[in-house]
Image (cartoon, rainbow, N blue to C red; front, side, top):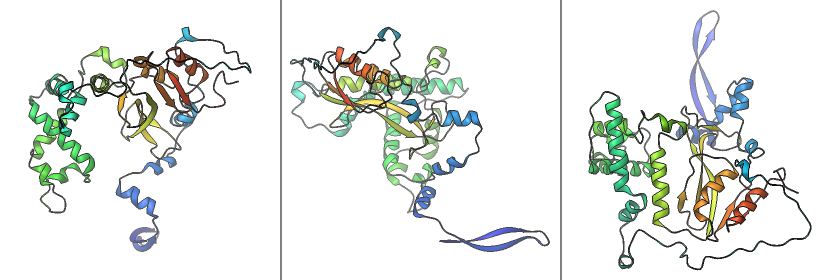
Length: 342
């Protein structure tokens, strides 16, 4: 319960102060503390066009997703007799083998940073993407900016720490107050330099018009690079899953989606293929929807005899059929109104 002094309009005497008590439930307190106002967005005044766009959520999409390749159209004919598909196992494949160390190095204990750097291809990421593109972006903005490998690595590390040691505004890490300041961060880099790198950090060339056909063109080089290094670091595992993840985002971007019944209503929706047991991420697609996402993400698994687990956002008889042709086992729930369901 909170007591407030409110200004109330009085027709004769103008504004007067009035004491009023209001009640705030625990959930609302947490939303205020986390600066989250997702629930307030339900009360926005929207016209019909806005509603059709914003309420085009996941449930609506489930009724319309189809395999996008017209050459793969086929007619299903269901019968009561069932002949199970015969799958073959690749006996020569070592499922889930770490690939970025040689045989002689496998027996040595590796530090987490070395494993992390090898998995994401940190050296290439810094030298071939972050440094040149950030410098180019500053030049295109008419400013002078330069950096080096050690500084960019320090900047990345500071952001990783900020991801789990969270303070309200990021400038609080450099605060002099003992309850806010984080010397571990402040001693690595001055605030003004951190803000300068943050300002010019870039991943793609804004002047390259050919990449702007992709909605993810701002980060596309990073996605392409990580898709490659993740798969080069670990061989395919036998059981994998394709699923979607909502990334909270309330800024203005064409990729932002509104999902009415989701706890995270305003967000980016990303799909990925990962190991079912460990959660290791193998690949994220740049484009696609529903069934086509699964087909994109399983191209590298053709003929291996892997198992793919999916939910009813992706699954359909057609998808099961085409995965079977590639010797990929698949399992998942399915919507009863999906095309070709008997």
